[in-house]
Length: 236
Ligand code: C5P
Image 1 (cartoon, rainbow, N blue to C red):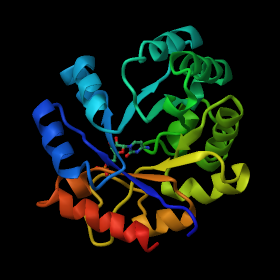
Image 2: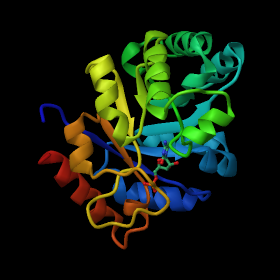
Image 3: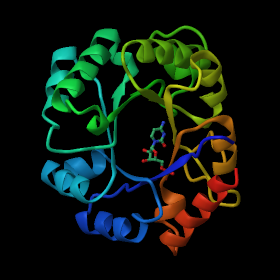
């Protein structure tokens, strides 16, 4: 593998103290820490801001609204410096273009600009769920359609399931950043994740970042769990 796959630990908690504890144990052993809706709604943006001043942050809020509102939301992020953030590709081209523009204005120094990631199809949705919302065709078709549109609209990358990495790399090449959740080290519990892959296989398939939650945070020794995954990525 020619490029290093980086590790994000998902801190799914409503407690500032818990997030700080995990961050303390993990920050030297992972490349970023993920906070999402659960932490943000429970603890507030001030807590997210403080956290982002101490740690590399993946802010996973999956924005989806009219272009003007998404752009307004992102331009209010100026004092928070997430390394990566998410919007929904299904918000459409204009929304993604405005999101990109808003980030370029809020972070004029391109090295500080967060990596803009578009979520294609939620991994909780199968073909039947897609049909119910009017999407005809397979999950793969929809992932590919949304992925191409999102990258050509200015997204830097995509959040995708491990099973979609190869498909997206074939269609889009190596430039887009691919961030992949649903990762389980060999031998760990799958929890509620259905389409899972080991860190080694995700790295070999071409993931730039993997997102790992419970196998780290529910481990008796989160530091050791994160280090073991990093070792696996190093030798992938
Ligand atoms: O605990 P686990 O490793 O399953 O956590 C994975 C993290 O990635 C969670 O924060 C989950 O919300 C997130 N995620 C996911 N699948 C997606 C997008 C995000 O599991 N498609």
